[in-house]
Length: 324
Picture (cartoon, rainbow, N blue to C red):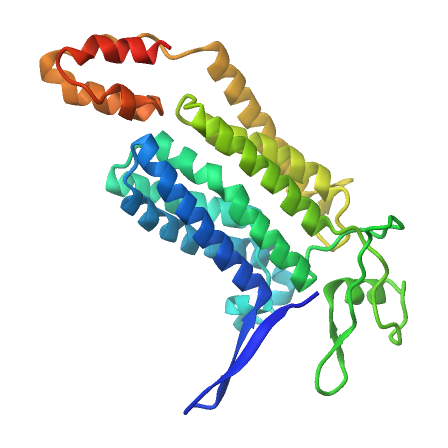
């Protein structure tokens, strides 16, 4: 565990700036994902510069959504400490809140700038797992989102953290075990727990590899987004069984599991419906409707940029390519 990457003092104002490992990993994941998304955007008919603006809007809205979700589920604490609501530097971001906020920001930007809706969302969805994997690695270094007790050889322990006055302030697993009387205050480390943050990072990398391959196959517009929601929903639901931190539960399942099962089930149903109801053959656009026909192809098929490259005699070629 290493929650703080480094600290340095700003000259003149004599203030110490703390760079935390979690925030650093999120920044690295975002920048790498944006780089890959820009490269993929041009191949799917999306303007890379417009996609960069869209990604920034999604990041800002995602952080707001992730924080709001956390504040809502921890309102008992924040209702007594309103000033703490904006202190994201202390942690407190929930992934599903970030997905909801980020998706709203992305869709608003797509509509505002009249970008091809399906292809733009597919490009974003194909790189989200990569950014998420970096974030989960940051969670591991921060000690949050920890797992249940385990006696497996790869179980990890987290240290006792104290402030300058000697008061115990962390880590999260240590405090959790101390509160449950599993350890005493003189213990130096927590008990071994599942490294669920690394499990999460690992299956996100697998999902990223799969979606990257799937996007390269030029599937029907929107299928990459649905495939992401199915695969992540299933993996997150299973990983939640190994979580040891305090999360809202209703019966035997956590709130995140209910969300995950619902999202995965609905997305799988949508994919099955799309597979059993292929797009109908579209008529060759008339001369006056060529622009509208090209726009429709770009919206509904990732192969549209390549298929619509030719004009005039190439109209029959467009139909041939679409039927491959």
